[in-house]
Length: 254
Image (cartoon, rainbow, N blue to C red; front, side, top):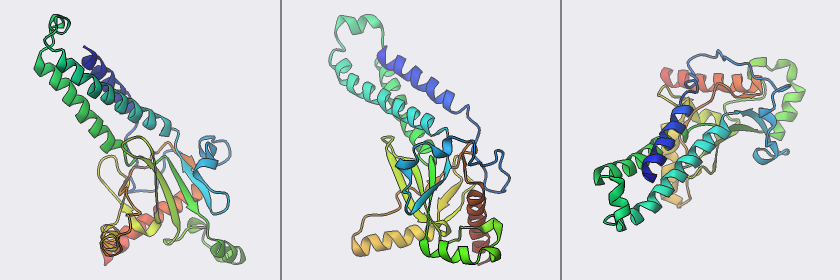
């Protein structure tokens, strides 16, 4: 009964999570919510934890990050309780208390297997979810851009394909995972629950360097899902989206 109750609670939690709107599509630059930096509190929450005032600034944050973390923690908790209680239930299977409950072995194993599969599926879906995006400021580019601000286009102000960003996601244990890369290394992804993905050439170069030098991989997350309810710097995010879409167009031409 414990496993069945945990399984039902787990399924209800995940059903509440998927009531949220579907993923944002990168095929167009039309945002359903305008990014703002004046009245939105989500863009300034925990700024001291995600950005460094010297070389990084927060340009995107989503209010659904806490919900995603809660869902993953709850899923892991129910799976842990089920895994810990399973050996005890199997050991005392012949006891009168277990036999009086009327639980069949197939039902017990099915509930345990469903908990494992649902936790894995939830991790696969929510692992690309982006909580925050931080832009690395380049002192040289900032000084040069201030002197030539009149010649800089407003749509691409402050960002170039070589700009470095840090994307925050969650791993299997709901811990913070930071992925730092250049904008040129990202390309649009048109699958379910993903907005961007790391280019295959970048991953091949990283794998070759790992085999040659033995260095640990710097990019561990290759899929990213951008939430449409996020808020932040509108100009920076629109510029970032256009650069990523431009990367795909250049790749098609080549």
